[in-house]
Length: 359
Image 1 (cartoon, rainbow, N blue to C red):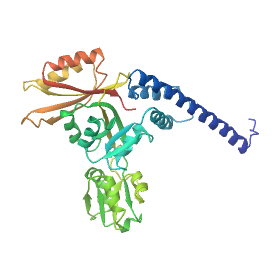
Image 2 (cartoon, helix red, strand yellow):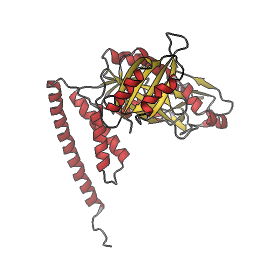
Image 3 (cartoon, one colour):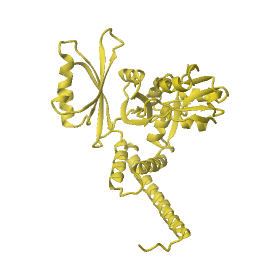
Image 4 (cartoon, rainbow, N blue to C red):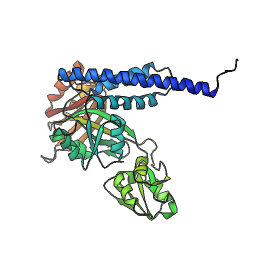
């Protein structure tokens, strides 16, 4: 095998040439995006189309021959798309704050760093910010693979007219953070109730007898610890950098596969992307065999249900609202037929949105 005669300097020069070409192409792409923006504005079209983003990711990943990894490719294009969208129009996204929470991480994962990300104090505040048009999108948590559903988010959809436009699956890793970075200095641990529950076994084995304190969020915990050299916070790595904390131990969650699912919400729904999920909510009549009958329209058409959850109907005792997620878009003929059949045994039925499935 013939040995390459290229030097490191030769290879670095080639890298520089490739980088120059990438820069030129990024600016060419930006010019095209600006022209698209002008056409959208002239035709009164939405400047952001979530399904189009999904098509871009799918197309590039399907034609990627490697060795560049697909995960990194998506991360890079997320920022390219985010920056280009910012050229068309500033995109404001509200999320359940404060900064450095996992909701913040999920929002950055979905919309990139060029969007204007605005922390809100509560889930209702996120909904209100979008409903009043002060933000184009909102991001709210809906369920965790370990701790279950976020009931407050589900309850908000009962009264809200907002549409679900996307879902985000965030792999959650909990770090133990402190000012000193030494486990022997820790006399108290702060965090949100869910991360404490998700790290209970580790805490019992490694910090037995050390009290834990529930606070509003992991970011609030990190903020408290930034002024206390004898306490620690269970929070994200982002919180460590934001509040000048050191990592005592990383990834202390008890379950390795710990994911939180977030929903993006907006005043307008999504067109069909070709790989969609639909969420609906409904209340059924109190009749024998009603639960079986409400599932039959989906089963008979081979529509796969990915989730079913019930919540008490707050306006009437002992009645329940069901939340169902299934694969497909509400414009698909089979989905429309299933929903028409479902209406026959419902007191009410509400489509919460069809949106691209999380990758």
